[in-house]
Length: 562
Image 1 (cartoon, rainbow, N blue to C red):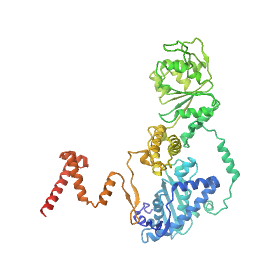
Image 2: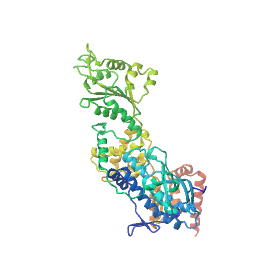
Image 3: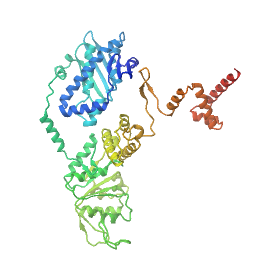
């Protein structure tokens, strides 16, 4: 098998020229466009809503095929005389250079003279996966339509005969990476069917089918409260939401579990909003925040004179929630004495105020939440076993935010709208760099941490500007980027204080030796002559600093003699 590894792409990078004088970008004489991924994302979404997924897929396949054929004409021209697999690698490497996808060849067997081809490639960071999942959530069928068409068009043009690819695995469907396999049409058992996807069609709109789908979506039950619907489209979120919907039509006691900050109260409010009790009160109690000597009176109420300072009778949270929902947050922190009374209320459906002689019937739906392992708390004697069995009737686990990365961007945009309204400040959204940083964050504080970051980003971003990575994570270092130099070529772009200092030094004509001497002498002065401390400041060893100081002194002595 020929070596499937990629050659260096420096020759391709040198072909990219940015002509600022006439507003054009060139790739080996072909005009290129630098297009926002958001624009392609919007176009893709509109096509799917208008034409339907099937027609949109065929349209994007053909568009990608045309782009691939165009690039195939460059391959032999750019790398004439190089090995065949290096010439073929032009297409995959251009795809990477254009920011479409990262391509890793796993198998490349090609012989244009014999007309044989077999290629397997792994794709990572597909722009089509990212944009499609953002709009439509995880999928059951591959979505890299334009990329697949490009691979087929490029290989067809390079080989001089029809070669089509299949996407045999897709990250949008849960795979770790996308994977494609290509063969000549005649070598595929379903080659004729694959070829028909590239045939032009009339693009007739199936309005009745689309209208039916829209109506079906509108009829879906929404878990919404005063802050809007619960936001998410990932599989773990959808599973939790489906359990919530099934419980909504009943009066079953629900136990919400999950880490701190995952949004257990939002789920509880969503359950209340979907239930028949939605027009009745929703009362939330943080069991961990109530003082131990007042928690029973807060939950169950108290009669006048029941304890010192009780000047009037007052209802507890159970009575205030009558007919509605009572949310008991941090249930695992409830004192044992209050646990016993809570168990009695759950069994009898009646509460007895402190100091009262008669119980009062209440019709309350209990939703409890905890981040404590109740079974472990029972074993340690901190929680009643009989109460655990009464509460743990219908458990719903709320996934941590790191378990639902597909929801991070949706939540961030939802929170952005909330905080721009709250602070009466207009921002233009998130930059792609900011969204990428959000997607790759570990989220130890879950949704609550995301709320804090987005609010901070809104405050730090300039009015009318986009929230950037530095606004969300002010202390995070900037990552290496590519920029364009004066010759129109791509080169590494540096950020930070060192880059600023270097630019200022170049602008003022400072030489490297003079800059090094000044920096070393400043460090020695700041450390009051302590060379060990000065070396640590500069990130050097003491012998390295001594060597540089000796070199500086020798240079100064030579200058004095001359």
